[in-house]
Every structure is written in C-alpha cells, then in structure tokens.
Length: 163
Length: 259
Picture 1 (cartoon, rainbow over the protein chains, first blue to last red):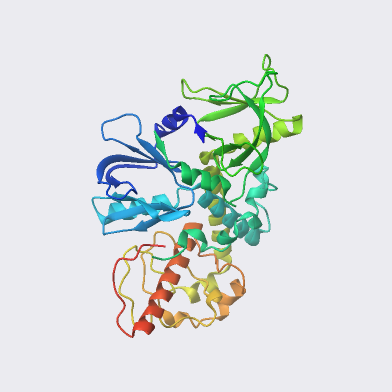
Picture 2: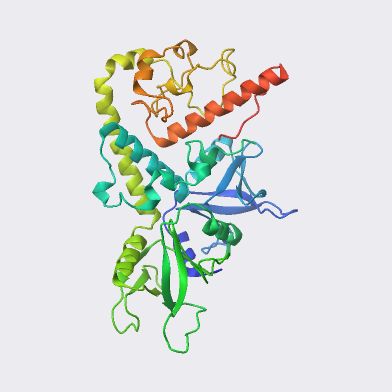
C-alpha cells in the first residue's frame, strides 16, 4: 500500500491532542522498551526518538483496543490481531488513565458514533434533525443503520470483550 | 517512517461505513506510470473518515494507496489538466505534491469534492461538538419543565471516578427490575456519589421519560462519552456480581481496565 510519507510527516507537526515522553515497546517478542516522544494527532499516534523532528512511525487508531496492562502501563492492539500489542509505560497511573481515555476517543469511528447518538437524541427531544443545518442529513454515513452490526448498541466495540 | 499498514488495510476493508466510493482516474502520483494514451488510470476509490484508499478493483482485498486528508484543500482542477471533471487535493505543507483525480461526470466530480472537503477529523469534531452543545441546550430546557421529576430522581447517581471503590453490599447483586427505566446519569463534573439503590425501585417518574427498547437517556445525560462510560461501568459491575456469586467470595479489587 503506497502512501506519501510527507503527508504523514506534515500531520505529525500539527497541534497534538496529547504529547508526552513515554516508554514504548513494540509487539515483537523480545522487544525492549525505549523512551519515545508520543504524540496524538487526530486519529494517529506518532512516536519520535526524543530529540528528533521526524517521527519514527505512526499508528492509525481506528479499530484499536486500548487496555490497562500493569499499573501505569497500557497497550494498544488492533481488532484483527489483539495479541499483537504496543506497550506504553507512563510515569503514573493518572497519566496512564489520561492517555487511555484520550486514545479511546481518538478514532473517527468513535466520533461518528457520537454524532449519530447526539443526532438521534436531539431528534427525539426536539423533533428536529440537527444535521439539516449542515446540509448533511441525508448522507449514508450518518444514519443509525449505517453503524456496523457490532457497533449498533451504545456498548459497541469500545467496550468489547472485557479482559 | 513506519505505519501499522496491516491494521490500516484491515480498516479499509472492514464493514465500517464508507463515506464515499466510486471510480476515479488518477495520474501523476508517485509510482503511477502514465498509460500509453496519457489518460489517467482508473481505480476504485473508498473514502473512510479522513482516509482515501484506492483499489485496483471493487473486489480487491488490498488497498493500492492511501491519502490522509488532513491539512489539505480540495478544488476543481483547471486546464491545462488533460482530464475532464478533474479535481485536486492540495496540501498546505510545502513539498507535498497534490493528488490529481478525475471523476466520470460532473455530478460525481461535485460529490467527490464535497465529500473530500468534509473528510477531515477537525470537521467531524466541529459537528460533534456543535451537536453536543445543542443536546445540552435541549436537555436544559427540558429539565426546566421537569423539575418535579428532577427532585425524585436525584440521589441516583453513577460513580464517575476512574478508581473503582470497593462495591457496597448492594452493588453487584441487586439490580432494578427494569434496567431501561433508570433515568438518572450523573452530570459531567459533579462529585461522584455511591449508588443509592433505594432509588432503583423508583419506577414512576423515571419511566415516564423512557420506554423499553430506547436508549436510557434522560435530561440528565450530559454527553455520549458519559453514557458510554456509564454503560461500561454497569457491565463491569454486573460482571463483578456474577463473579462474586460464582466464587462465593469477596470480589477482587484489582485495577480493571475501563471499558
């Protein structure tokens, strides 16, 4: 799959939702935790060597699972292979909690679910469709039935299987 | 630069809804050799969120390319571009080449430009925040009309603190008969209070707000994420209750990952 690295590099320079130096360990067996500057920008998590301007890599956060590991540590894995985990070490459980919450809300799909939810609640309460003002009320992606089967309840895939 | 390509491809092929799809001609991009006639190569494009994927065909199981639609503008492309119904995705960042694409007709061209212009995460976030505040307004004006019911459902708050307190004896194995009729969710930002289960039995006013089968939202629901978290806590506590009964012992107070 081709992509333009420069597009991602430019994105990594955008204002971040969250940024911190964390310990990071890749999913491969025997990988060692290294200090990385981790930056959350839209639905991407970029990671840099602490003094470098260009990111080492990026993780797209769609369909990811964020889980508490040891106290002060969390992991990110992806729906197609949940055993492959990227591990992150925080300096406190508080920081860990902050990151986990931010990462769980960092996907476009999560926002889409929120939008559909709010739209329906507003419609139920006021009888009006709030998307009409944006001219996007008819778009298929904002319809309740457009949610994939596993996300049609509020519980959705973010709750998923509790560890 | 590394990217979790396998997961990205999986997302591209997943059944999460596509925001726009169609055939487009592309040319001049990196790695796309020109066709003998000079016309663009025709690929199947799928827009999901802020990601534009191309595929060799509709049935392909692997994306050919990815364009991340952040920090860019989309405009109709003008001559001397060789293709009709062309448009360009231009990036603000210096040194990033624009993507030139062409649709099969004017309607498709306009639809694509519209869809791609609204694809950014920021746009979606704006819309969500706007709706969130509209919901809050609607909730507040509704609450004003229901202050009578407000009085009777106070005290029935959900704990919102991330650290889970040790459950009281009533938590974990006493649940309201009708789950859906519990109308009260703690306001965002207010202090968490232990669940007062004497309120669970209060069916009357709460059930007027809701009916079975609907999401148990009430004027007190502050936002999706609160409701989302609330459901998650209910499930965690339910599970703890089952485990308690199954083991017949005190529940572990290990740190659970928040759902």
